[in-house]
Image 1 (cartoon, rainbow, N blue to C red):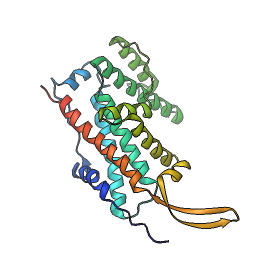
Image 2: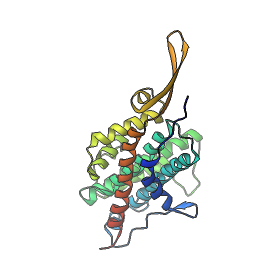
Image 3: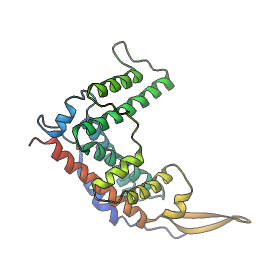
Image 4: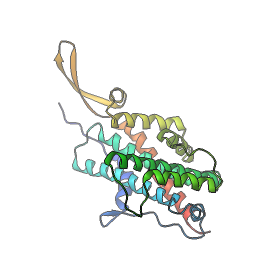
Amino acid sequence: MTPHAFDIGYLKPLLSEVENLRREGAYEQLRTPQPSSSLAADDSALGSYSASTLIRSSFTAGLAHTDALRKIVLHGEVDPTSPWTLMRGALENFATATWLLEGKNRTVRRCRSLRLWREDMRNRAQHEEDTAHVPGSNGRTGRERVQEIDDLAVSLGIHATLTKPTAGMLIAEAAISIGVEPRHLTAVWRAASGFAHGRYWPNLRFSTARDAVQDGPDRYLVALVIDEHQHRILTRHTHALLRHVQDRYAARATAP
């Protein structure tokens, strides 16, 4: 089979931007909100469950996923699955940060932060139970943290159930923030998720067949490579979200 020459041109703007955010082996962090900024005001009543902590963590995770793809591309071994999986991770990270930054008022934004923190602590509790881990004498379990978050929400006048934010919902709402039709973004995200979970259908819709070998009377093995045109769409939206987070965070974390 003739080797597939992967055209990295469409990836260069995003990968170059991420590379420029590296500083001595680490990623450049979003700055701590200035005391009199809008974001600091959101955080003021949340204590250790601040929105800015989650936003900064999500943003850094998105950079790491994208940078991992950069290293794969530079190494010259681009398979048909990893670019989808890594870009999907970055998309979810930047969409999460976007969702936390947006919201029509402070109560909504605080509620979003507590919803995500609650899910974070619920997952922590599950891990503690899986590993039979018990925090030290001065520590609290994940279950206790969940209750603490529920109590904090009530004290802030947030009486809505702190439901788990689903990835599809986060991405659909983030799409609106960057002026993209939600279903256009969720569609490409679903394809990326299919690759990440080893599903069959994305290979038929989002890969290009390069060769086929008969493996039985009615069975063929098909060699697939990444469909760069389809992956380009995911890359474009992910890059738009990265920039939106940078711009929106800078605006909300800076004092007027």
